[in-house]
Length: 118
Image 1 (cartoon, rainbow, N blue to C red):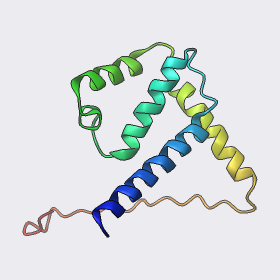
Image 2: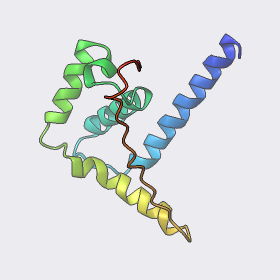
Image 3: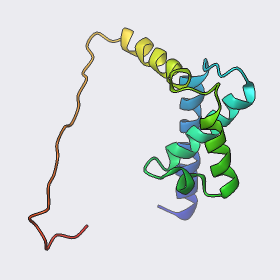
Image 4: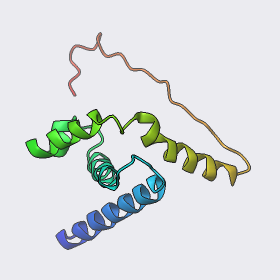
């Protein structure tokens, strides 16, 4: 794939993520539209780097501090953030005849493989 093709793919993936966030969390009510805007920004950042810690994902000290301030705000609770997601999931599920709730509980233990790296 060309470098230009990679940019288009990245741009399209970002657009799709942004659209998903808008759709999934459009009904979030944090009591302040600025908090909603910040939530969307944080979600987009974490969708791009889901394995990252807050400082790693945010990239700058000011964005890291803003994220911690957001999470420390009394108006921001896990219930308020997740409620629209729960509702959207329930709405999608209600349209399906069969729902598979699959969970992988596989664990791997490599302690006896001392020569294994990675």
